[in-house]
Length: 420
View: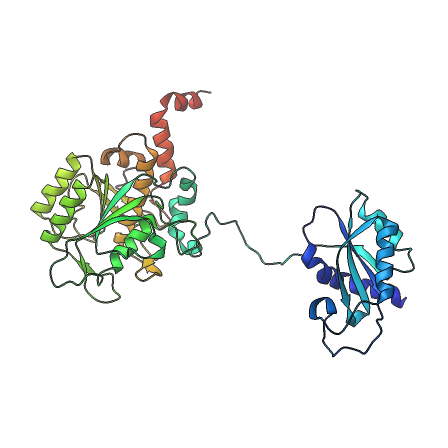
């Protein structure tokens, strides 16, 4: 009776002790334990077997002989062993190499008088719930609720912005941020004298991260267009340390706009807002005539520069009353990059503009032809209505836009699909 009870109590422990080093083999494996009473002085309490520590509890000759006999008699191959002092047993892991069933071998071993215990080598699992398998290995991805609202993971199965260059007119950007590695092709500064280089990085770095942070690099976050490249045109300067507030002027913005248009980038992000400006308007109109798409942040009041200029795509928050030519994207508590390798949340329609720029970058990358602002608005759905109270109401649907892009390219396929 005591022997039977010992077998039951030892089963799980022996599986754990003897199975760690040999788990995962294709052939079935079993554990067999033999009585082990070695001669010699006892080892100090807590000592491990000599196989591991070189002193203390050892395998007796009788146990070794029994282990060899069982291997020979039952056609088994020993693949691991461990003497267990606390139980006075020698535990051996055998592999069944000839295709016999585990139950058949164990039934025979249970009748062997030299065997104390024989059981399967079992597998155990943790009980941690992992939830749905994440699409990305970036550790802060789960905090990017805006990407779920925008349907970015699904869109990334089709396009990630590869081959597209985006011009970012903003503050300077931390080009050494590990989550922007390889994303910044060039950086230009049009900051006035007296603004020290590298002191105005916060807002531009945040916008760059939203647009194009590297995906699946085990770092930080996922950009909306993680394979797009950014060319930075620094025209704004930070107003206070650790603040997103920044300022620009007509002169710095004019220089940056002219350079951005000349760069050949088909898409320009302007996460800024200000009064109407004749010089800047003329530059935007020149860019629009050349086929450049501009995305600007909608202010809380009347639109001026740049969203008050016809042809500029405005970006607003959900629930906001949007004028014609404007689209909505999440603007509250969006995870992004901060200078010096940091990460934090940002809010405001500057964020919406960067998100919309990333979405448009995905569309442009997926399109075989150049997309103009009117085509982009048509694909994404020109929204000029008051947004409802439901979550994500009015957020642009990039996957629907990609489907419309495919339908426009292959109208015969779409027509056939609609035919009953």
